[in-house]
Image 1 (cartoon, rainbow, N blue to C red):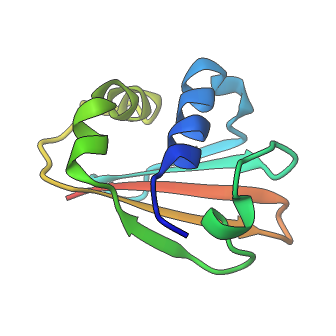
Image 2 (image 1 turned 90 degrees about the vertical axis):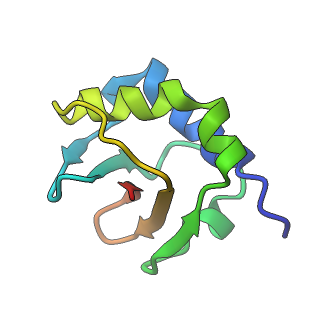
Length: 109
């Protein structure tokens, strides 16, 4: 499957407009935002982007980052932090079956 990140954009956009769907927000590191959303939420290609009990890590393409800057600002505000300077954004995703949540982690490098 070619990685277009359309599914990732859709879920990030959905969270931006419906922040109540986030069950937990953590920010264990200064350059990371972790979000947990219920696994009852439909995500396109969820089996691919959110593997069961495994982490999937992807470097977001520069054009994706430039096109969707507002999304990253939103997530830093959710974590109560100003957006840091960064060159790259890595996204880590997983389906945590036992907890019945999807993990979305954005790492700003």
